[in-house]
Image (tube, rainbow, N blue to C red):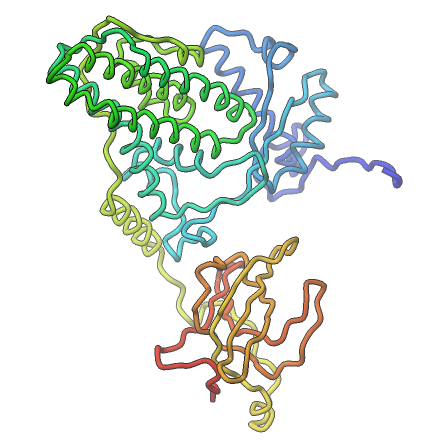
Length: 453
């Protein structure tokens, strides 16, 4: 601000993608001038389709405009785009929520590694709502990168959505139809206590949604589902029915109401699955306020299968399809790969001065405020332990490095950095990927401290 603001260059010379500037031969609008206007165009398209008024959204103070963007485009969305809107007498966004990047199995997405997942490939093998739920379990209001661990993905979706939520509805609704004609009864004191706790929890969860704390919201919802399942286990309607059918009906009524309420809370994340729950309950699609409705003395529809568990086979087929797709492109011949020229020739005696040793990584952690650095604590066997700072943060998960054997330059003079002192250097190869770094591999017999010769 002290230097004054400068003009923003909104044109680019050909060749360039995007829209050509009218009246010119080779000038194009800069993409971040026109791209955000697509938000308004999408609103206009929706308004025409639904019989709504565009101005009620982009000009009215009664609506809220919220942007969700990636962290690499903050500059355009918080400086230029609001300025354009203000200059055209439109509202600027009320809030801009910024997400980090996505890694897969702890690594940057890469076609060669089979971790680049197009949406079309995912949809061939898995339900999109599974991914919606998994991302919701990871996302917070902070600017943080998240990782799609395929093993964790299977476990999380099956445990939370399948075992905690869907299984709750399946077991009680099926039992109600099998033994009590599919009709709810009246709530008793323990049932009311359960529903009051769930309704109170819903208020906190609504605030978490509003604050974009999706991970915490999913955690609280899962806890409520667990409480409802515990209620079923404690009341044991299958045992109650032997002596008091109406007491069993009351217990089932409370559990089914809990299932219906939790479904409302999951509606923003699992819209299709919860729509199936609405059909089972015989209710119209409702707003959040439906969480306060209690159903008594009414018949409900039989339970229909609404969830298929994720299997390892599904994941294997997805990964296989990605690997196959990556292999469809003809790999470049080794002689066609761009490599840097050889360095200055050195004598054998010069080479012997470089002391290469086997090291084992004992600890690896991210360096705060450093984009590329990891801090590694390594063992050189009887030569002791050292600390090395390595620029492999973008390509390697610190947790997965622990225990790995690497090759290091052990006699490199210590280098003082602003993050600490680095006492060596590890060896890595640079691949075709600009951010691709590949650590050396050693056979099992190699031990820390061994000399590389």
